[in-house]
Image (cartoon, rainbow, N blue to C red; front, side, top):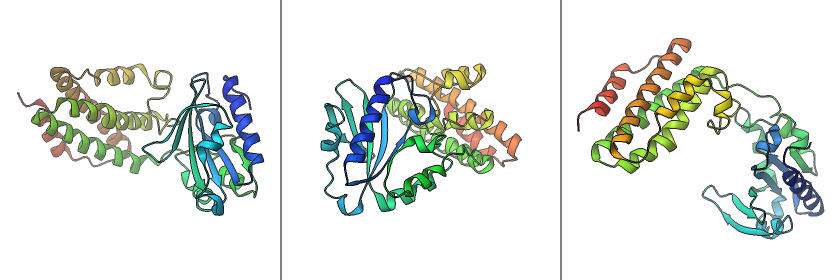
Length: 274
């Protein structure tokens, strides 16, 4: 499979060659934009390196990846993933995982990870286990709407209440961060659930401009702000109004029982004069 990024295609070809030549590796599985046909010149290379269980402790991921291309940066990031920057500024994320438990975990990603062409995503499979596991991710399974909507509406109420409390304390920067880092992605997930557009579930802002209606995009813009007090307070109120509108739409579609009294109390906290 070739993509719109020849540089990424070449790097993947080289990774396949290196993996086949290294007996310590049992399997290699790509994920991310390349595997769903969305890669372009700005895309990363992302993969799981499944290391034979008896070799996992001594495997030097950085040394292995330096054979792929010169590295400008290599470190273990906050999620325990080996993150690298190559000399051409392409980013990479590599999970170094013992093959036994790691490959067994792959089928549990159903509903989270979609591999429409699993045989292309598998760069190495010495035993056949990884290919069988990856093929279970070939079907795009929609989110179960009722429980997902319930979870998201509860999350939005809880986190917006936190925003209201930290605003009342005068922590403007903290409220700004919570709105943009925590609340906004939850809103976009609920919005995508309602619009039957859940392909980019884990990164709900991806391709937002192409996949969500203009009215939803305008609501998203309205909940953004600079980190100035009045802007953050305005954005928090707009954000909660959108959350309540989304929750109301979800309740109407899936017969959710919303905690309206709590929602009104959150509104009161956000609207209280300062």
